[in-house]
Amino acid sequence: MKINWGTGIVLAFIGFISFILFFVVRMSMDNRANHDLVTENYYGAELGYQNEIDAENNSRTKEVDLTLETTDKGIKLVFPNNLNAENIKGTVSLYRPSNKHLDFDLPISLSQDYLLIPDNRLLDGRWDIKVSWQYKGEVYLFKKKITYHQDK
Image (cartoon, rainbow, N blue to C red; front, side, top):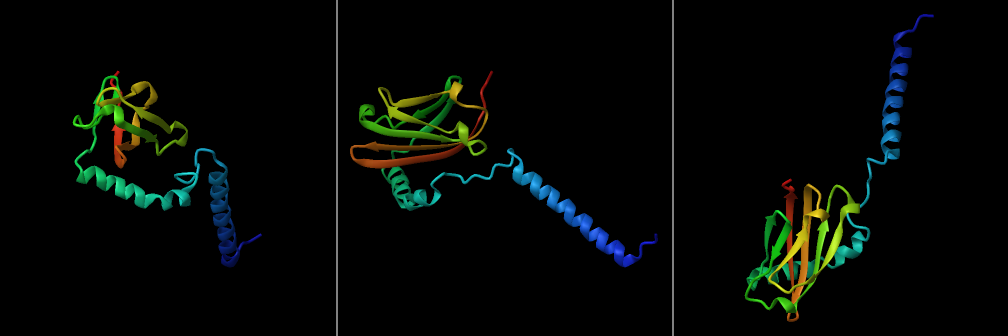
């Protein structure tokens, strides 16, 4: 049987469409290609965004920004030493963009002017740190993206 050029074009189109559909089905069923939203309640979190902007502005204008230090024991969040550490309350959220199962929150309860995040809770790689804290009724926010590497 001889195939003319019109039949060849139709067969090429069918082959190309089959090739594309194969990869679409394969990627949609593959667990490694997880297409979750960044947060579970994305639109609800968006409504509180202005509060975050105000809290970040408080940190800058009142000069109470935190500093971040990497030590051999983990990450050390240093609060301003002119504040009474026992009056600082809040949470530290660590977000791992590559795997939401590694995300965790820590409550802030200080006896000194720093909080240590132990290295056994942190894997090497990219982390987004968000510290939301209050001091004498004022709300403050510190955000930073870091790449953590444990020295072994």
